[in-house]
Amino acid sequence: MTVAAAEVLVEIDDKIGIVTLNRPSALNALSISVMDAVVEALGGFDRDPSIHAMVLAGLPRAFAAGADIGEMKGIAGGEAAEKQLARHLSNWDRIGNLKKPIIAAVSGFALGGGCELAMACDMIIASETAVFGQPEVLIGVMPGAGGTQRLTKAVGKQLSMEMNLTGRKLSAREALSFGLVNKVVPLESFLSEAKKLAHAIAAQPPLAVQAAKASVRIAVDSKLSEGLEFERQSFFRLFDSQDQKEGMAAFAEKRKPVWTGK
Amino acid sequence: MTQTTTQELLIERKDGVLTLTLNRPDVLNALTLAMMKGIRDALKQASSDKAVKAVILTASGRAFCAGADLGDLKKRQSVKSFSLGDELRDHFNPLVAQIRKLEKPVIGAVNGLAAGAGASIILATDLKVCAEKATFLNAFVRVGLVPDSGMTYSLTRFLGYSKALEHMWLAKPVTAEQALACGLVNKVVPAEFVLVEAQLLAAELVKMPPLALALTKRAINRSLEAPSLDEQMEYEAQLQEILGKTKDHAEGVSAFLEKRPAQFKGE
Image (cartoon, rainbow over all chains, first blue to last red; front, side):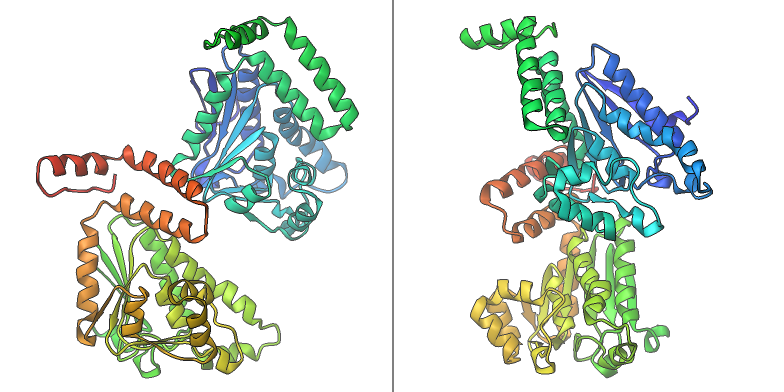
């Protein structure tokens, strides 16, 4: 790894994998090396059969205040920008494409690349101090890692336009009211609440969880008829699993199911 | 102190209490931008300084504060790009919000008249000690403006709809006695005891567990946003989960059982 190990912390807590952004001096600015490390860690968890859910956490003061502007400001026009940044930006897509659920634990600034990173996750637990926004326009650019796309799908066109065109930021409560986040909790407990949610998901049968995640993602992108077809096929396929047999048997026998992940 | 005659805002730290004193008595402590910035800077510093456990906001002379310094304002108003809305957004609103968001007790020691933005700032404080002769005055409408800096929000909650409108439309002062009766202030004492009384309150608060004080303030502010009872109880549950794990909670319980005074550390 090229990144100083301390800039991204990785830990496992039972069936959940936790990745913590840890560049407090730079308000967790998402440098190339930090994003590479995040993708490597989350990708590792995604492939690890003992991990069922993931948490991507920031620090209390900042989830991530944005991309690393220092790294970008010298980039020339023409093809240079694409050449130098395409791979970096695709890291956000990679996170969005992981199979296992990821919960973003957001406190403080989630701006620009930080907001895009939180939105690339499946759910967001926000502290009361969280602030969301895509202020790229204020420094002469626009979002490049999903800010105009995921934000629009999350909060609708009108608000997304306002945020993308003026840099308007949302407080945690506003973000909750517009459906951008799942829950707002006190600052002291944003991480524990995110872990709690991850543990709750990790306690469910993993094949069903992953199939449902894939199906919900399809709903965001495709026509209803295609999404329904995908959903139906996924539903049928789960009847091949042992966990389906176990889950329905346990329900009938009024006992707790024991999942095997098969 | 030799600086008192030149400084618009006096700042003093003693025994865990930060005291901020508006100090332009000759103009009834009318607020300048510099004074507001001074208060904001001091509060910002206090928020991360564990040694500061309570804040007192008071003023020199016979008035607490006559509101914004209109002379100062007039000068800025002559600039073409001036906007009264932005004036509030940039200076007054952040100050009021900062007082409410500071996770430490802020005590207003109202030594005399609190008018306009001066009243708004006092309303933002957590506990208020008020001089017998102090009054709250709202003359915004008389100069063709709407009461601001949170006034229409806070005062309506104390006075009720019709009294609030009467106070604001007709610039009818609220006396200290009325303020006490409606729960707008905590205590009314002779003017010479206002600061002493505030200091006694502060000294009491300094001994309390700071995290419990902070989170209680947070919960009460949250309740003003009118969540449902269920939402508020869930919020309390979340805060209690945090406090239940603190050393101060354990110390408080032990001290109670051992019948001794508790020593809180803010941990």
